[in-house]
Image (cartoon, rainbow, N blue to C red; front, top):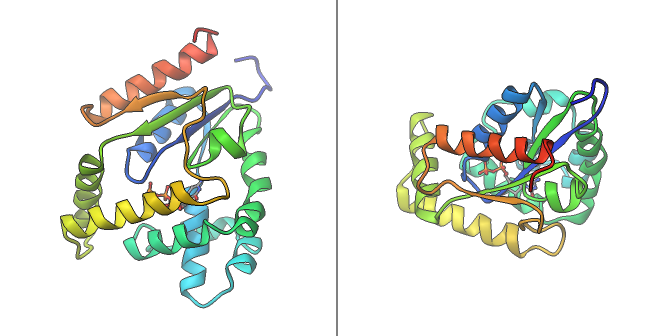
Amino acid sequence: MPAGSAFTVAIDGPAAAGKGTVSKEVARHFGFAHLDTGLLYRAVGRRVLDGEDALAAAQALRPEDLHRDGLRSPEVASAASEVAVRGDVRRALVAFQQGFARQEGGAVLDGRDIGTVICPGAEAKLYVTASDEVRARRRFIELQATGHDVTFDGVLADLKARDARDSGRTDAPLAMAPDAVLIDTSEMSIDEAVAASIAAVEARMTGER
Ligand code: CDP
């Protein structure tokens, strides 16, 4: 990549598909900055649970809000997907995400609407997904390991409810961009998913399709 230029990698997909790890590793591999845009919605959801108005919370969001404890809890995930249906909340978060995406030196953003709405012109787009069962199993293990009192069935039900809300909303629904590369991680180890993602981004960099 020529010095001083921007290159955006947009990574979208449903809950617990492995976007987080894939995005972090893709960013590390290419030396790009990384933004987990789910954290923006989780931080707004957290402030709503604390009694704030969703739009006011989105407009007042500060970088330190993304580092608050407890943002990974199932309660905050649900609150995030509830605030994420609001067009005014989403619009309040657009400029920050687009500014991040076009920074010099390259950026990876992961979320639900990055390749479709936030960065439709992204140089590389991936859609990372896996079966419902596999995603629920991964999230269940992750939540258990971080001390949350959860059951597999409960996690699966939460995940399906959130996917339905994210895919069904009118404003920026979860969807695969037509020019995205599909990475189905159901049968892949994390290393395989990362390798497939890096290869897909490299192909876009060198102009292959
Ligand atoms: O980690 P996980 O995939 O479970 O969720 P997340 O990426 O942290 O996103 C939490 C919630 O924020 C999602 O269920 C969406 O409702 C919302 N979100 C969104 O609407 N748009 C984004 N670009 C990112 C997240």
